[in-house]
Image (cartoon, rainbow, N blue to C red; front, side, top):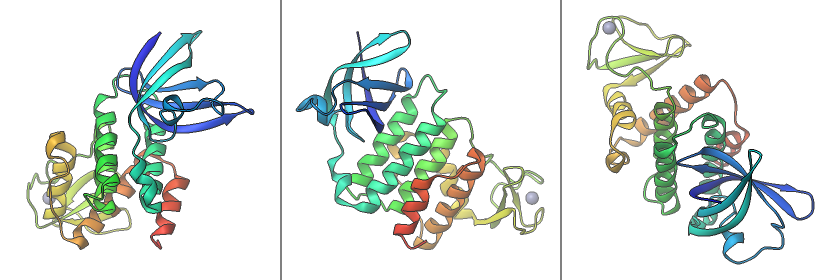
Length: 247
Ligand SMILES: [Zn+2]
């Protein structure tokens, strides 16, 4: 029997009574656990195996499959359910996680990033635009897709006034070395500084930076394009979230 802490990213009903849950754990990465008689169980084990429950999960392993024994909630993130946009954004985050953490064995940083982001989202402590940008970019950095954010790739300029990010070769170039085209995104130096902060800062300082609303929107536009082009796919949960915001 194994006991691990993890957060439920997805529930899938199987037949009349059972379900599978995808759980992100620090030690084993993403695992699928079968929950027998999910409809019948109640109390602690029921609430702690629902979507976005962060729980202490006790399970048996048999022939490479995991079967739930019992579960105890640590934090359920009930507050997300008070806002349709918040729960939709969290569902999008869970989707990207399921897609990008399959092969990760040590998911400590990714798990921490998700828990921290949900904490700020649940309590409305930061704007959804900011949380989305931070989550997308830091997740990419933690899973091996960190953008090259040091300086202009061509001339080495560290703090140009404006900078273009190329979606062709995933690097920055200053105005002198690059021109705007449909494959590049133009950012200001303050937006680049925010990107550097997001991919490099310690977790306890990660959400502590400020940008104007306009810059935050451009940052979020950049992070979305970056993650979608790196992962080379679309997410229905993202389309739904954007439709709620009239985009
Ligand atoms: Zn340059």
